[in-house]
Length: 262
Image 1 (cartoon, rainbow, N blue to C red):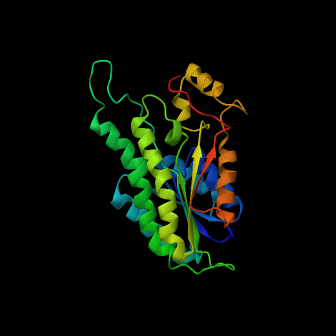
Image 2 (cartoon, rainbow, N blue to C red):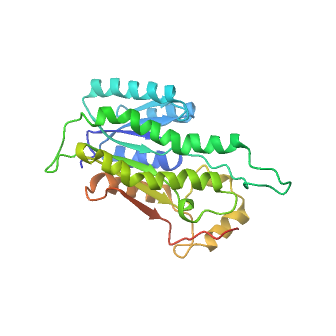
């Protein structure tokens, strides 16, 4: 699938892996619709990228907030004539907490809801609201492809650590829905792919202490370092361009298998 002159909706697009993805696709000629909660960052990035970028302040846990961004993106597409070619659902949070703590208190349901609402519900809500504008796009190429959905899981979906029950549940769900989503969308010529990164330099990992980071590095085989955002973005680009990538989860983790505890 061609990237140039197609519009890509990227949630979490103003920082970290989402921003790296936006830059990579933009460099390849895409129009990027950046959805993010951080209005200052978003406006700054959109201004830097220029006329092929548009920012929308969005809380992905809010259906109305997503709807407003999709509406704005569709209006922008009508102006540019560059149809929606993909969604990168990159917004996500991590909020660690043992399911039962040392005081025998269960994890607050509000904490679980917060993680699930952003990582899982927000991902599905963004996808479902964007799809009506993708299924009606002009098919391209020999196979009549209309676009691609790229989701972000995590290595925690497969080997989550202590304190990651809610996070692993949200990312495991994203991994699990990849194939049925691809099957639902196959008749429209739309693919679905999920990337499951391990430790990458991002706003989330910047909050980790030095000892915790070193412990995670020790669990990696090669290279023994955090992944770089541009390495993630290059895989996103391949997922867009390679039509045979569909209904699958790609681990991007330096052969890391996280231990039960740090």
